[in-house]
Amino acid sequence: MKIEWTVTSQTPMTLKSFLKTKRISKRLLAKVKFQGGRLEVNRELCRVRKQVSEGDIVTLCLPDEPANDHLKISDQEITVLFEDEHFLIVDKPSNVPSVPSSLYSNHTMANRVKGYIEKEDYRHKTIHIVTRLDKDTSGVMIFAKHGLAHSYLDQLLKEKELYKEYIAFVEGKLEKSSDLIDRPIGRMEDSIIKRQVTASGKPSLTEYWVQKRYPETTQVKVQLHTGRTHQIRVHFSDIGHALLGDALYNLKSAENRIDRQALHCNRVRFDHPFTGEGLSVEAPLPDDLTRLSSQLESMSSEEKKQTK
Image (cartoon, rainbow, N blue to C red):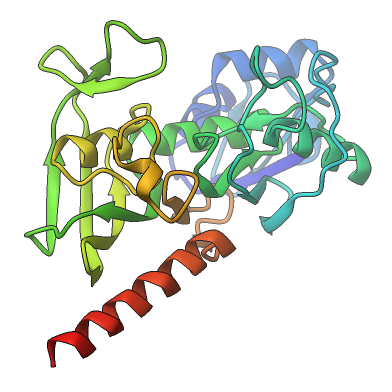
């Protein structure tokens, strides 16, 4: 993998300083040096002490990344939403874990993407997971194809410049058409899985906008401003409007018309770190949530008829 830049600064600087402006870490430079990569200026091999000037072409040749032998290959197909030489963005189905665990060693999204990478015979075979989703949450999930791409998106996440939008169906009628839920979230003492709103938790911000109102149910668009475990599920449960079907945080989940939490990551958007262009990728609402929406629409229509 070759990454090229043209030096635009009128002030000469060392190659090391130039690469720092491109957020190339010392760790990555060490990999380039010791694992078969190259640094070139105007097509000539050079070291980081070399001076570069306006108009010089800097080329970073990344070393190959071998596959993780501990990660099993799955032949389950994936739905690709976007792909280029740097990123693979896929649509994760519900009931599929993002990564392997003691409970799920195969057929997670990481296993499936590894199978896809092997099938396509990518040069870089390491799996770089940028964003994750809960097992029963569907929607957009981002993988990076090499370490530099992963590093860039991690930085965007830290700077809150990678936006993730969700569609959720929640219990009851939200009073406000939009709001920012600002409540700290931490681990629940008696559980290794559940989270809760607690004063000792980490700052957590969830913004929502009402999209549709149904009898006793509201469809909302949600944007995360922080990335805590179960954040959307915990926040809506805490304000008295738990997600439909959420067996962990909704005591009425068995009464719902869906057998998983009604949550879908429908869109991600960010500025592509290699092209500078804005990138927006969407995943359509899956069949089970589409059916739920249709059922709620029918109930709403029936209620309107009865009130006439």
